[in-house]
Structure formats: C-alpha cells, structure tokens
Length: 259
Image (cartoon, rainbow, N blue to C red; front, top):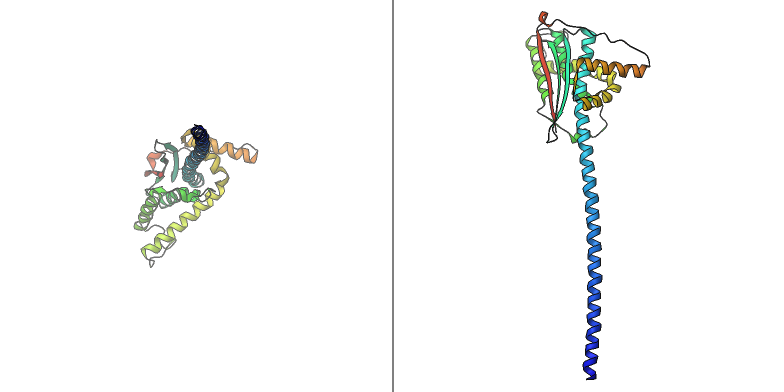
C-alpha cells in the first residue's frame, strides 16, 4: 500500500514536471513566433518604404528626363527663333503598373538644316539631364530607346541632305564618322544648355510631377519665377508668337517609357 502511494506521488511529481515543461516550451515558442512576426513585419514595412522611395525616384527620374528635352528646345527657340524649333508641352503619366510615360512635344522646321540640328539637340536633352541626377540611375532603364531612334533618324536625314558638308564633316569621311561628328556638335550644344539650366531642372521636374501636364506658357511662367527667385530681381520673359503656315513645320515628340 505504501509503495502504491509512493508510486502515485512520483507519478504526480513527474506529471507536474512534464506539464510545467510543456508550459515553458509553449511560452518560448510563442515568444519566438512573436519575435519572428515582429521581424517579418519590420522587414515588410522596410520593403514597402523602399518600394515607395523607388516609385518616387522613378517619377522624379522621368520628370527630370522630360525637363531636359524641354529646356533645350525652349532655350534654342529663344536664341534662334521659334520658327526653327518651338516647345509645345510636357506631360507625365503614371499607370497602375508603375510604368511612367513621359512626353515632351516640340515642333521644328524639317526643311531647314538648323531646324534639324536643334531638334537633334532637343532629343539629347533628356539623356544629358539624366547625368545631373544624383540617385543611382542604373536602377532604371529606358524602354524603347525612343530618343536614340529619333537621334539616328535625324542624323541620317541631315547626311542624306548633305547639310553641313565640309563644315561639320568631310566628303571623305565614312558614314559612321559623319554621324559621330554631327552627333558631337548637337550633344555639345545640349550639354551647354543643360549646364546653364541645371539649377532649375529639379524644381521644374517637381512642378511637372505635381501638375502632370505643363504647356509652354506655364513652363515660361515657372521658369521666370525660378529665375526671379534666384536673381531676386524682376525679369520680363519675351514670348514670341509664330505663324506656322510660313514654315515647313514637323511635329515631334519624345515618348519616353521608363521602368
């Protein structure tokens, strides 16, 4: 009888110990799960924040690219006349897939050598503006290569017309050498203008992000405000009107799709 009681007592102790062990283990597992869940939650939030930053950076990247086209086309029209090249509008659209579609529209005289040369500089504007961006732009890529296609098309047209022969290139130069020389002339002019407008590119891009659509008149007003703010003195912008019926006008767009 005593031995049975002793066995029962030992069994109770063992059972109590076993239940306690289960309780401790269960609490440890729950604590570990909570810790893991917290870590997962933190990682998820961090990834979401990084994704938001990426989207914002992507939008800003595209806006700066489009403003690069715009400032070059606009500046050349102010220097040489709106009958040769004239800015029309800038647009920025984002769809549900986070693909940004940017468009800068300008017109130029397709039958004038300098009209084509200025258009060439205009198409280089977006690519040169990208070089002023401080974020790692290798994360983004230009889908469709619209700028490069337009550049090649206009360079080929200039060569076929034999424009600037013996000025920019020689008759003894190969086709590729001629292309390179014409591109260099246009790109150097673009780089000069982008450097001139570099301080205004970011605030102009911010306005484009906010408005999504900017006309030439709105662009001029924004630019005037930025210049006045920088110089702290009023400046009147001369807006020249153009009668397009007198000229061979070609409507051109930079359609930039950026992933």
